[in-house]
Length: 164
Image 1 (tube, rainbow, N blue to C red):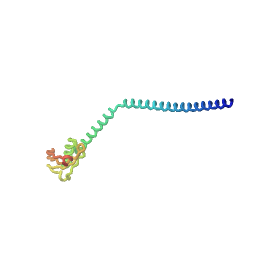
Image 2 (image 1 turned 30 degrees about the vertical axis):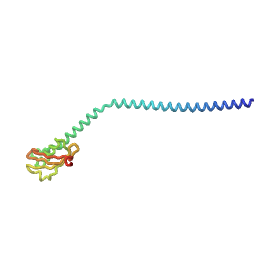
Image 3 (image 1 turned 45 degrees about the vertical axis):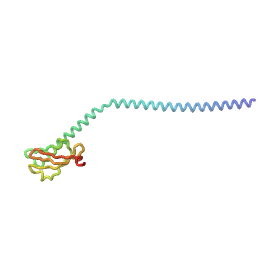
Image 4 (image 1 turned 90 degrees about the horizontal axis):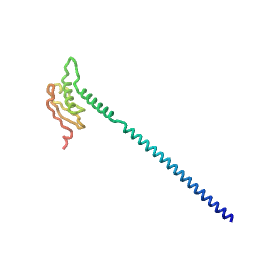
């Protein structure tokens, strides 16, 4: 009978050890989950801090700087289109015609102005100037009649009007 009691006691000790091992495994799993939860909570807190930081940043100064830069570029382009100043002498007719045509087109929102006439054709009082320019991403082609110091007549076609 003592042997049976000893066997039962050993079985009970084995069951208790098994349950303790399972309990220890469960405790370790719970600790790992708790660490993950802590990491998640820390991440959530960091995200909230970054969100607050982003809300504090004001994009308005950057917008103002960009607008000022655009205005400066536009002024620079206008000044490039103006006729060069020569003190004590008149401009050659070719330079005068080029400056008038470029200034006229830039005032109407064109950029990348190309005069297609050879320079010899521009050295007369009244001339029909063939041009290519871009306005709002569209290619414009056409002619401008320059007489004296004025652009008298224009005929410009945008690239989309060339197709049906």
